[in-house]
Length: 450
Image (cartoon, rainbow, N blue to C red):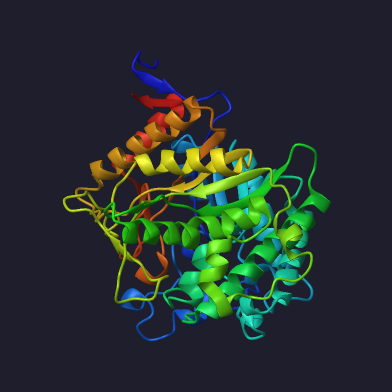
């Protein structure tokens, strides 16, 4: 029975957890799967901490039954997972790989049997290496290939999937992957990154068209963006202008394109000759109405002007004495409210979901248990801010914790643990952390303490 001080979420609220294919599945060479850009990037010396790879990861490919049992134990109503593109099209195109489609069919069926609703992300960064060899996201044809993926997966799974997301975090895939070089394919060219960003948005549009051809009445499709408040370090004009540029870089570039049908004028001027060619019809394809918008939130950006750097390269700082996660990211719960309110007020995308929110801490296994009170407090305080947004009329429909499992955390390898379930990567044993038990209590109570 909920106490009087418990904050109760709406009746149709979704409690979920999220993962991504390359981070959890493993089995990278099984059942016809082709190589992805992350398989290639993991072989680049120094690209990944400790030389880790996703070759085994959490072995989720072979352990879905046990992982679904964990989801039931946690009281999850939904599971957000991504499709491994090279598992469906090992060479990027041609005939789809039946074994890959069958794996996801079984996963969807097993989730339904457990009373858990599947939420499917079509692209979470594991582009087939065969498409990268043809130009990857620098090639407009990759967007059309993505449309083929969307149609193929929707045709195979559509009867059991009613919530679709085209692209996860196009900002990360384009800029971390093509300008900062920290993610696959590891390029460092602003012009290439902007072209990749445009083609990723075109892929979203192509994906929506394909999904709509297979969706049933009541189904929903959208995209997932990583968003963050961008605030000046001081009230100086230089810092205020730097924060506005950072907001254009991180937030407005994608939100304006998707919900206003144009890139922001100030950023177009700033990017200058690095801007990609925008062909007739591109923005109409990109800005088709979405049924939902997934928002990923982890921290805010506090921005200072750097006089020694080009205008786009502002300096991000962490306020003195601010609490931080193992990633060095400031813990700032209010930011999730700020993002939800701003997106609703400025863009009105309709229904929104928190598609990812969570924190990495230096978890350790002691006497068969993982005590992670910091993560419990992090999730609690962020959920209170989400509820605050709901009370102010923001149409938020659910919350997916990142992540269900400790997993392969991209360039950080296995050294950063985001899961509410601890994974011993040597034995593949799963142990629900204190924060996971807390989250399971939240899902059953349908609320949190105020």
